[in-house]
Length: 348
Image 1 (cartoon, one colour):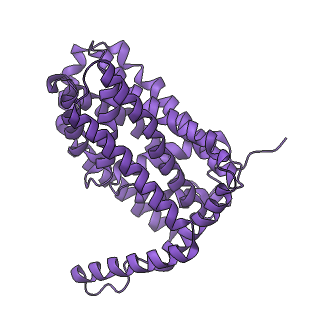
Image 2 (cartoon, rainbow, N blue to C red):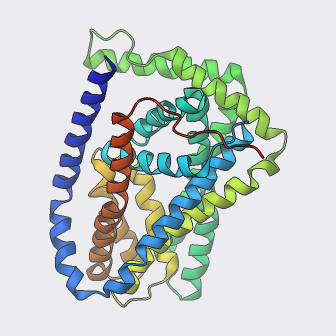
């Protein structure tokens, strides 16, 4: 049975890759044409920038697992992070597929699926929270060069407010097991009713008990962290650095085009595109991501004749850098016998 599941996953993965390539086929053509117009040596800086991004993400996971009582090796976590990025890239689900895969991947390290999912959710929360510092920096950088406008100020305010409100709401719910039970019983019931309108034969599309178990585990970790919030200082630093290195990857492409644009414009555009990309139904947020980045950059004074080819080139080259190693480790994991994906560190 397990072999059948592996075969099915391989088939689904190949289909997802085909869809991804088809979705960005026009971007491949545009990128290839522009490759001969830019500084190729500058583009090579994308590789170390992406390595440092993955290094920060790996250290973020390592710190979070350490807080909840699991010491995992850097090497195996780095590999698992590449796999997770591949899964999130080819399966458009707002990160839900990635959370499920992460839970399965961590089982070999004797970590429950609910704890692994809790760590993954905490990682996402920290990444979004750390972006508030960068948005403040973006507003300051735009103001210094006179590119600030009422539209940009409103946009930045909405982003910061949305992050704070969602995080506060999330913290309020998981702060109490009673609130978790009440909230998810209500939401699961409402969503199941909605699903039954479309599919009358489906009795329970969302399993309330499994969702509640995940968030009760989150509650236990939340209680642990709330005793000393200083434990999150190091994870927050790694989350901030992960965002910084991704932004620098984009900025490298502008340098390759011979343009030193305002870093604040890139930060805001990246933030808006990533928030919107969470709800995209296409792999990697194709279409929505590029359109929103170009729109925001234009509003901050970066002409679309520059921002559009830069955004497309960044997206295509970043996909080429990230997807192959992620697919290699993902496929290798499917083919091999079950082994600990993130073996515990040896204590000296």
